[in-house]
Image (tube, helix red, strand yellow):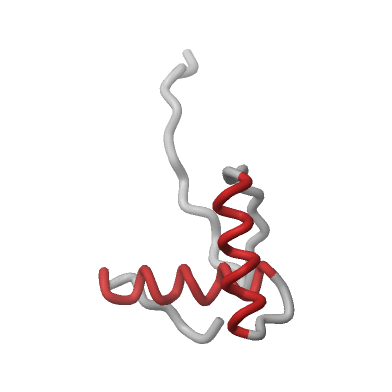
Length: 65
């Protein structure tokens, strides 16, 4: 008998992982402006920096991004 219960499974470690997130236009515009002002080559680079800065103080600091 199979279970209908969904379980979250941690994906295997990988050097990178691709995810797609739907964000409000206003937030994407802010990310773009931040990245442009800081000289990031892409919005992805800006988001990586923002996430790293936000997560480190909470104890979720990672390696190099």
